[in-house]
View 1 (cartoon, helix red, strand yellow):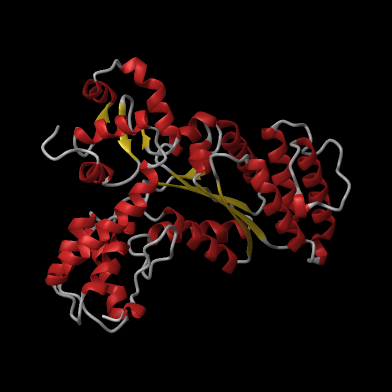
View 2 (cartoon, rainbow, N blue to C red):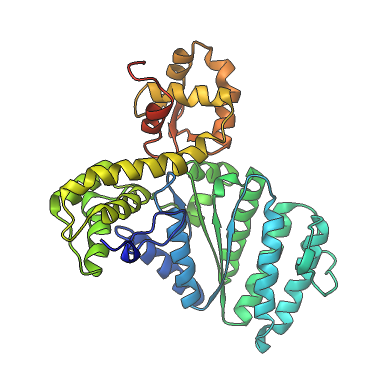
Length: 393
């Protein structure tokens, strides 16, 4: 069929044509956004899930809803090699410049800009083209203590937003790359914002370990946030994610093809988009029939292996690759760390640093004490296709 009309969107964070199975999460976020604008308490959100389950897509959707509700938004992707303060500075500066255009908020915005200038000086932020043309306010957000200063800065931004009858939504992707101090400072700031009833919400997304990390950072985090688990879609929602976009293009797909795609992808949204994209292109006409699946699967796996999976294995050192290959030899997981050590023929204690480094790179996580699992769905199958000789164990 016509590839130009192909409705599927396989890509990192690309908005799919149908956000099937995520209605409750979107509704909860929208309700929180509306309540906060009315001065009523609401919890921020941390979306937790493996790679490829659609967390970034949901963050983008929440950002869109926030803007429609009158919020100013700041979207940040937390990298491994930059500090949170360097990412926050230009985003907050941008928000305050917009708020400064509102007559009722000019005084509070000016105060917030002074606090931002103090914050930049305290943390020696390279301001570049975002230099604030006001004097710093001594004693505000300038202690050099991240927890105190981010809290004071957020309070000033919240006061300016409230004066302008607006809200501020901060959205952070890849939260697991924040340091414990950075995550703790954000939690404290949101806690204080809630106590003051200011129109600020934080929406984060990250790997499943974030809930535990948040609790470790501040014990009251579980009361400040809801932690929706973003997982593979149930069969009906997964099938709908394929069927509806095709039908909206005036075409159809046979039920047995839908069942096969859902089984092959196990309902993971990124894989659904890839298989949907390929089966559309492989079909000469509508309805899409089962004869197209073999060619579509071959091309989908090729693209996933050369892109989605390969970029992750390439981040590992040779020794780290040995570790994850040993995991895959044990089956689909989760895995006992002691079992991996046995496969490698090494002591569990000597493998601790290697395991920790792979966790730090976001490749594996610990779902329970003594257990490890891949953060990438079906990564064990990829390793078996390309890194484990057939017939070996």
